[in-house]
Amino acid sequence: MISPKIFKWILLLVCSPLVIFGQVTDKTLRKQPDVSILGVFHFVSKNNTVSQKFTNLQSSCTQKEIIKLVDELAAYQPTKIAIERPYKTQQQLDSTYTAYLNGNHLLSNEETDQIGFRLAKKLGHKKLYLVYSEVSFDFHVAEVFAQNNGQEKLIDSVISNASHLANTFDSIAYNHGLIKAIAYINTHEAIDQNHLGYQLISQIGSTDTYIGAEVVGNWYSSNLKIFQNIRQLATSSTDKILVLYGQGHSKFLIDLVKDAPDIKHTSILKYLK
Image 1 (cartoon, helix red, strand yellow):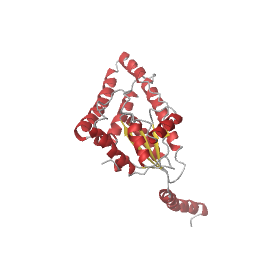
Image 2 (cartoon, one colour):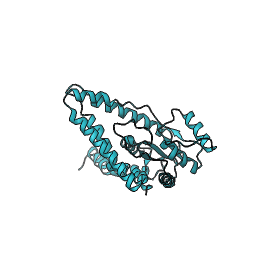
Image 3 (tube, one colour):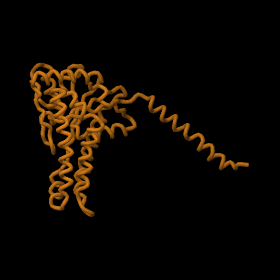
């Protein structure tokens, strides 16, 4: 005869999968705020290890493409648009966007203006949301250590990896258009390739000196703060938040969104044609 104690444990083991399944099913059915990340190579800023060369934004062809891109992004139907740069405060962003709505602001070449402002106006949004957090990423410190400690090959690999990504973007942009190039840098392959650079940098150091890991660790910390700013915008289960941010942040932000139990992630590639 099975003792009551053993029977209790058998019952628990049999029933646990059902309970867990029920919880997962309930979570997947529950409506949650949705976040989609549009990674970009900054149209104006070139404060990167390597930057793309394609910057001809004011040509009639590129302007038509940007308008088409805005139409494609509108299909996501975001309720809020979150941006990175160039505006330093929410007040500055609000006043500039209001001026644009009133016909008193000429769009700059910044992606926030070219894409964000146009999309927000198209959707009838009264404001955009600044989710920027100051980034701490002192690549130069890691670079100097590597050069002085026989780790130049790691730096060469970082530069080569970034150059390949930027060159591929340029090739697609010049030959197939800006939308295709932006779609490319939002693929898993391009996002992972950018992230490889941080993996390489983290290896710079010695057995008791973690220069590269500390530099990348500060970068991770900055992205956690950015994600927290995004998360605070999700105030309703019906919110759909489009985040317009530098592609170097995409891997971190997408993973954080996917891991969050109270937020859903939608790939922006579903809307880029």
